[in-house]
Amino acid sequence: MIHFLKLEWQTMIEEKSIKKAFSFLLFYFIFFVGFTVYVGKNDNSYGFFPVLATLFFLPIIILIFETGQTNPLRRLLPSLPFTRAEIFWGRTLSKLIIWLSTLLASYLLSLALDSFLSSKPGPTAVFIAIGLSFIFLSLEHLLILLSGKTATLVRSGLSGGTMGLFISSGHVIIQTLAELFPKGYTFMAGSFLLGGILILINKTIYERRAL
Amino acid sequence: MLKINQVEKTYPKFHLGPVSLTLPEGYIMGLVGENGAGKSTLIYTIMNLLHPESGDVSIFGMDYKTSEVPIKEQIGFVYEENSFYENLKPAAMARLLKLSYKNWDEQTYLRLMNQFSIPEKPLKKLSKGQRGMFHFIAALSHQARLLILDEPTVGLDPIVRREILDELRRYVEPGNRSILFSTHITSDLEQIADLITFIHKGKVLFSKDVEDLRESYHILKGSPETMNHLPLLGKQMKKTHTQGLYEGELGVLEGVEVEVEPATLEDIMFFMKRGDINDPFS
Image (cartoon, rainbow over all chains, first blue to last red; front, side, top):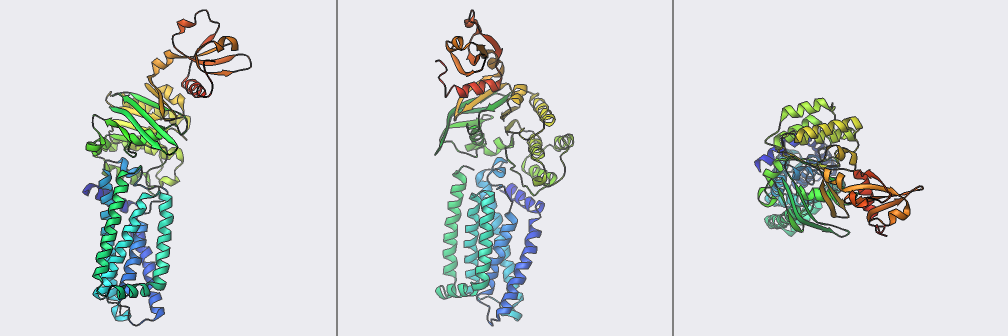
């Protein structure tokens, strides 16, 4: 597994994907903060962090694992000296690390902008952000089953759709979720359960299917 | 080196098998057949990208269930299409392969890159032939004992093709390495293959030594009346005569008015396929 993770890390370095992802994120961040300022809402403690976490996460995953026409999980990686389980869990772990990093970055940015936007999240917002972005992680992870071209199209749609939806109505979505799950952790636990099941189904299909 | 035993795989419109094959150490086996015959399906099964419904594949005396990593460590692969990261340049891709294989041989890699003059451009900007060459070089650069090549010479000019064939010959010289080579270009196989396996509609029609093939199959030419009485595997009417593929001892034909010529691999494939639609014994 460590051997595979080293290969994943080296691939990101060779593809210069982290650098690309950061420049893309800067654009998303400026756009989102600009929109929040434009809307002029006084209290952003519910919506800002969860929306930012979700918006941060998807583009970064898309850029880091975007490989164009070829899907390395279908031809290249399974032909190299790794088992399918190593490849699946290695890729899952890479995404989990990136997910946790984006969560942390989003949280720190929300704290940093608090005096300006009142964006410091409460525990409910934190739990909802973790749960929501984890569901997105497990949904995006299903794309490893598709061909390179199809996955690229779906990822672009998912990214664009999420950006549009969350920038325009993200605060309302999070507010609604916070009303439905006032303490937030029940939503997070449910998301972990659902996301975990999706990842296990994904693993079973990936290990058994024809690549 | 490679043993395939009664392997079967079914798709909604295609069935492969049962296929049984043996590729001994030190041999080059050519896998031939028309498009959709099942060559790539068989190669993907050998690479464990497809799981057969029945039968088993044993490589170096091991199977994928227990020894997937040691098996793949010793296999060099070239697929028909690009399987590498298309945005990377060859040197960057090689660094990833070096990280993946324990026995990466930098000297061989650099020698071949130099020999075949692969430019340092993103793989997607290389010509199809250059990309194919790069895959081929990568496959040869980690001291693999078995090379599995799916149409490796497609899109290459004749000079480079000949250089590749020379490399392949050199590769098997030590005697403990083998090559499974699928191609449409039968003349390439006639130059280097020791064994030929012919797949047609998912079934292995034969898997034979090239010398046996040369001795077993001949093209016969004669008048339609004479040819109609011969047990041919397929025949073709020409303006001046009829010709067909004959399998068996030539001594039996003594006294029969026919012209005998050696059969090329292409002749054998052509007439065997025709034999499916024409009654060869009529």
